[in-house]
Length: 322
Ligand code: F6P
Image (cartoon, rainbow, N blue to C red; front, side):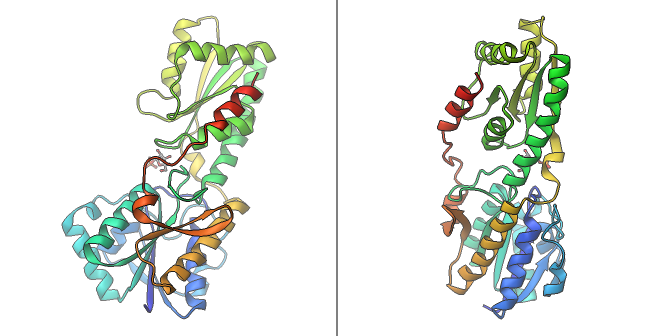
């Protein structure tokens, strides 16, 4: 293997740039050529590929987003798209491809590797933390800190007005962001996909907040098309008209911002791990970190939808929010 291609795909996550830097620098250090692919899989299909040197990644470790741009490619899901991507890989002389992205992006890499026998290595780049086999994903820690900062601010106004706030956070189908940010911000409750919540339970949550500080309480709600923060706020407004209820949907501000030190270190270690994996002849794996050690996880495992959710965290929030 002489040339490593690198791309970012799916939703951007803080720390992706640190990962691009790590793969580029570790690759060059170990004698590889690096080719950067712009706009995710779309860039592979459209041949938006350029040579990268160490200078291309200077001064980016502290930047959010991704300098390579990103996309949720629908073309790459088609046979024709994958064929074009493969032709460009051959044309550009790319021998191994490092894909930094979440569940969908790594699923794409896995199918591509199976179909075309390309060496694909994944790096877990998503704020959702929903990839199996790694304790954390790149971007998760930064986003959690962003959410906690936002909730701290919301709490000021919630207490001043004695209001109930439903704060909706991202996470797609996973409640890691919601549960842990609720613990870290001292929220009264979290509503997460891993644990069904009904309105009776909500009443209990709110009473806790109300006991503490008259009529103020914060509930973190994991995003959901059907029962997000607006749904719960409506139910509560109907059943408890005496409460002054507000909703705050944090949205995409959760994805931006300077990556935390933890995310930069995770990206740096796994980025170097990706290059080492290529040198060892590994294929079709994701590089993650478990218990502070770099681990190689088969791509088919990494994309499993049942990453263990530590139910103890539900108890922690429950007992500490009395
Ligand atoms: O996967 C990252 C994520 O931010 C999810 O938490 C969220 O559901 C989704 O992406 C939003 O995607 P988009 O930016 O395409 O609206």
